[in-house]
Amino acid sequence: MHIIGVDFTSAPRKAKPITVAHGSAEGDALVIETLCAHPDWASYERWLAQPGPWVGAFDFPFGLSRELVEHLGWPQDWAGLVRHCARLERARLRETFRAFCDARPAGSKFAHRATDGPAGSSPSMKWVNPPVAYMFHEGARRLLDAGVTVYGLHEGDPQRIALEGYPGLVARAVTRASYKSDERAKQTDARRDARALILGALRDGSHPLGIRLHVKPAIAARLLDDPTADLLDAVLCAVAAAWAARRPRYGMPEKMDPVEGWTAGAAYDGMV
Image (tube, rainbow, N blue to C red; front, side):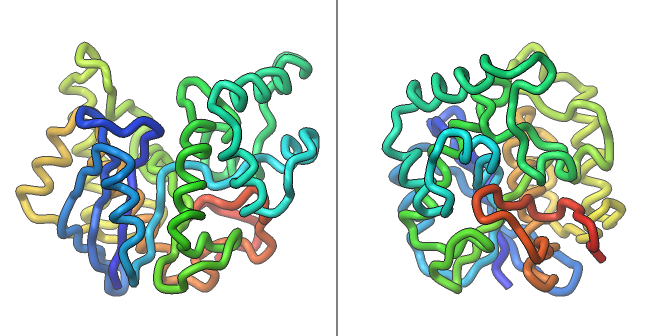
């Protein structure tokens, strides 16, 4: 089975491209074959439009909090919500979310999705540190335009299955130490050591998803030596996709909120 993992950015460029890990899975084994960089939207969109089959996990939030969407009176079906947000300029989206937060008491500024707690992820309306709201804004519309199936949210091409991924879900289960930075001064040996710990756990399957990673030495070296960990994050998403591909409903809750979505691999009540 063709498995992909996507480390996403809302502003792709040569220095910070969208990174896609391609691999194949059989049972609990995942072989990563190539790591591809898409430095602009045109390159990424051309790849996304290609035929499958594949199951992939993408590192950006697919939905928004139902509490937020209902408060704003926005569409409560995923395709309608994504199209509505796509019509908003980034600044308008930011100011809308800021006004929502400003009206709320300290300590509960952001509206969270049900998956945020189990996944350990930031609220999808957050526009700074990290700016995942912009990632939703740019990423979800391109999934919709490409006609892929966004599992649980939108039916499209059944040969291309997109799942929401979050690299931190597995990485933090292995080590709480920081393993990446885009700032040169923070690209330390200690962070490389943390990447080595994560890679070791992936290789022997000693992490919550249990997928055993196989990579050639040249790819392993690239994963260790990339201080931004964009490559490793793409592989972590591929691990989540490989885990999900083996499970009914791709491991998602039976009653997944069609506005919020769910992160592949995040635990929920009744999960086995």
